[in-house]
Image 1: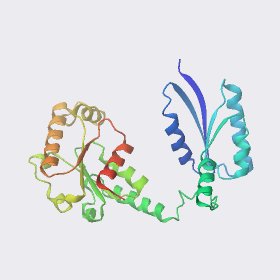
Image 2: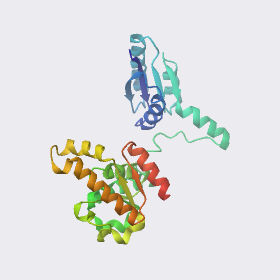
Image 3: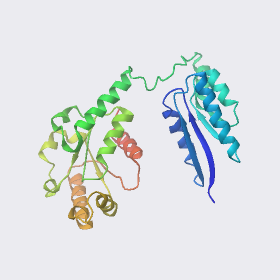
Length: 269
């Protein structure tokens, strides 16, 4: 039987950081089923007491203490939660205290700095998201000059989600262009892409996987047939090789890995 464990992600703000760090650790334990409870914006005494009540209930119902991953900045609320019946993982204090000692400087203990809508980083990410949405699937090609990168590949090879992730996570202006049958009759780059060859990066995917993805979109169609998938992928790869365009197989890797490998390969910032 699969073991079960209750997990809380608690934060004064969105809880995105606590969730990302916590899930990174939890993913290493494959034989446990984690019941996740997300408690964001715990920024008042009453909300902290409510969170403790939920932890108490989970502790009373289970055979093991719940795990609590916290990025709680308020010291008072953090101590209240820490002293409840749980195993407490304090991401904020663990790292901030060490950094304060290393830098010989007190941190600002300001809530929500990472996701502050008034910061330049936040504005950059929002602008990049709007750019990627406006340049999706060959749209907005007139803006290619402003793009940091242009992903190319056959339909359903992972271009759109990769572009949006790079925009959201890194503030990278990523456009994408779908290679269709007319583009794959030879190994010459489509005319619209030729001025931007240095920005191009190709995606490929195994035909069997592409066939499965397309079947969900347009089942029993020529578009989803294994023969069509094989032809498109072979011709796209020939185009990449002929034009010395870097490319990546997306079959077995996540959007996060795709983005990280592209950024590393092209030294994007």
